[in-house]
Length: 425
Image 1 (cartoon, rainbow, N blue to C red):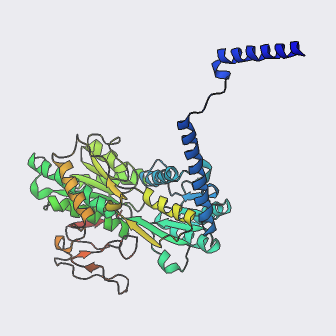
Image 2 (tube, rainbow, N blue to C red; image 1 turned 180 degrees about the vertical axis):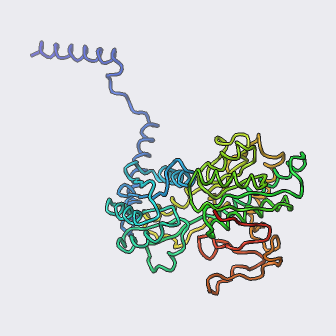
């Protein structure tokens, strides 16, 4: 018995020495700091779980049970959809969602296919579904009627408020603000071209490649033109429609035609790199849309008016998690981080552009600059004093400016002002 005990003690000693020699095999002592970190991590997990449980109890959805669907008219290869996708990924990161909680339908046309896509996403368990093209709206409305427990959010539309559906929502941004700022960039470039003798002062004509003659496009090119004229009052503008949201060939063709017609700078409300490609070949400055066009037109791209969809998508999805109502019409701008211009091409913009841009952006954020200030444009030679749409009693002009996107998220400015001419396809 005594011998067995001595042998046992010897074995224990050998094992202890062995474990000491193989450091990685020995259990590591936990420090006080590590204990505190572990406890904090566990507390955070418990708190997060408690929050999602509480939200679910209020009618929300536990974050881990959430699914989000997206219907895109294009894919990552065209700027407009690329910007929407970027916003979706910002939301995914901000809310800590996993890849399998996001379902995307790419290249969905503006027809019955959209309704089928929306219903399929709902059947796959999506709690909230976004669509990004104007022509998707009627099909989203139909799907919303059939799936009352699913939230449907549509960009650029206007029918949610009158639909009578609590699960249908419209959203957009004050993109006219970033278009105005990009117009200032363009106007400064025009001044430099005049100063350098490249353009005659009485021949400062801007070309604009527009998609459709909708208020969204008219509001966009008008705000761009007003930005141009704020620094280059001699400028005029010619708009050519393609009647397509995204067609490289049509946009390039339209830009070529505008350049041939004497336009010395081009901008666009169309989704491809068609216009920048034409401008780079012709050596004509270009202001793009959605994404930076510098890669396509390194010598001629100045900047692009852009939208950050992340703030809205994050807000809407968080509302579903929290069990809170989503606004029927949502629209924000520079002040809230929903609008901006892309990087300035320092090899192409005029000197002093960066400083002027900051000045204008600060004024927009402060509310001291209103893009559609009625003292800055005329219609038929007269100042616009009043404007109501579609037989409604809503007055858009108050306090000396047109209140764009305040009575609804979708752009409403559809007036042809003096200095702009339009050409159909």
